[in-house]
Amino acid sequence: MELGHTTPALDYLRRADDAFDTGGLFVALRELGRREREPVWFRPWLEAEREATQLRCFGATMVPGLLQTADYARSVFRLDPTLTPDRVEEMVTARLDRQAILDREDPPHLTAVIDETALRRFGEEGMDVMAGQLRHLLACARRPHVSVHVLPQAAGLHAGLLGPFILGSTVTGRPFSTTRSAARWWTTSRGWRRCSEGGRVCAATRCPGSSSRSA
Image: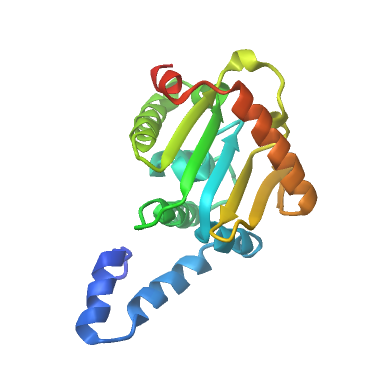
């Protein structure tokens, strides 16, 4: 950590702030550095996500980012030939930092619906990565504020195939959403309507939580 090769843990920085009476300076600097790793276009969504009390996400081709392991995320980012190894590691770190909302004292309730094909996508060369990811999903599903469901392949065509999406709401009840279509993310009232409809369809055809864990 002293050499700048690792990021100090949040609890460590909180204790340092208390010890030096900085008024939260070290934690604020960590947050600033973390945000610099995030794409500018994605920051408004991340701000909304951090305020969420409820999140519902669907993954048609891969596991949602909030539930990815470091190895799984790394494998996904390496698919982009334009990314350098250092940039890949930065993006992995940013993805894991994003998941910190699930570890806070008042985490949002997360409901994730994952298409069965997303869990069978890795070939033999990625079996260890996928095995670790499946174990992580099982561990997440045991948390009281996380629900993981699998949409069976037998469901056929469904609204979720139009692209991954996330629905959220805040303590005031304000809804927000983001979806990906044609290789870009957008958040609009139209996006909210499509995500809501897609969420309704996926919820109606998903396996119950216990069945998903045994599948």
